[in-house]
Length: 634
Image (cartoon, rainbow, N blue to C red):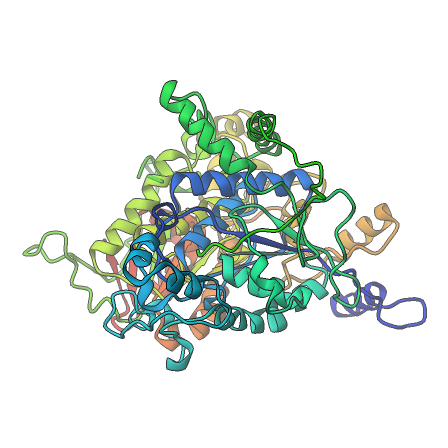
């Protein structure tokens, strides 16, 4: 049985020769300071304020992603702060790694140091008014705190709903460097370190002082020495550990930093200077560098490595002009410095073209209990208080597959430029109607994840927790995946194509276990699946081929519309409802047409024969009011 096989697999994978638990090699820790923000550029005290990344900051983080690719680092889990500049840096990184599906945890403990009443002030202005020595003491002293901000200060975190889950004493009015470092420590002890110990590679995208706090704990750096440690923006700093979770010393020839055991993947300063010089060159010859000419939005390893090579060539031109210190031993001593689209033709999973009905088809009437907008107030929907518990569904924006008329299913194209606008328009529309959310649910597919990103970015809510599940993926189209309607009609005939597209329980031909379209071969994603039963056949076949036990779960090789609903509806009723809806949380779900259809079928009692007439435009928010049990179209 599956249960027996699972126990056998656990024993075989977890025990050594003598029955003792086999040690797991710890993963790596990658620390990354977020890209440059608007306020960093203008020299302001930033702290818990929330300015966005600037273009240079995005370029920095894209480069960091390419460095990770070139060195072969693949994060398994990501931690970041609740501040926009760190969250958007994370989005940029996972796009560069072609891994938007990675789990991301946003913690206030990774926020930058709170600068109190200095927040928002220019550093030079503060120095002129208060004195350079005083300001420098607040910036660089380990225990000195700036004057606290008042609770009516526009930057007081207690007035920001992203921190509603914190107690009053957890919300700082001001912080010293030590306060900030101590705030990050529990996340290391009870979260990050435990993941590394399990063998997971952890990426932390955060801010100068919280990253220094982690480094102080990891390397047991003294209070005096920590003041000599800093973090340049967007250069990955990598730790490796022994089985006792002690940091391993840097290998000879690697670029490290005084008092630390980690290594930089590139010498700090090179990229920033290369970007500066390239920008100067652009002023002479516009478009000479840094202008993207994209024919496709598909991220590939080759594309990333070619761009990395371009960056490094620019760095080399700068390096050639540097005076090299013959006494430089490669270990840097750095001084402290205080301090992430568009609406277009519908993303067509092809099923949304069910409107091609024969003339003889009998159309069933669909009753959705739809509430209409108030005609006396154009553009305003009186669907109740925006703080009422609601579930808003947004079908992802259009993709290149839609524009080519291909069956997409579990294939993973990104949004097309028009699809980015679809997603952004959804966010603008929701913001215009006063909607706020507490949590986001989405699928594991890039087009749905990106739709969530752009949507919450427009709502200025990048900090929202985001839950990603394969159960919200689009219908798996089997052997039809990646093919156009005309190709399938030529191969199988028009009648058979219609049956596959319109039949509620008719499955297309399945893919082979060895097909690139089979989800079970996507090893970067499959390791996260724990809620699928084990496939005995696949486990035996793959174990024989690998000559070692390889437990494999029963991923779909094809699905009917009914099959798709059998996973999306339980995910809604057994996961989203108890952990969010029943607790009064406001929920945003960005997913795919057939996954959303299934949930709407459950919520609105839509009959089976009418499902194919329910069409969901890309990027149009569909609001379900939990109290009134009605659907509102925005």
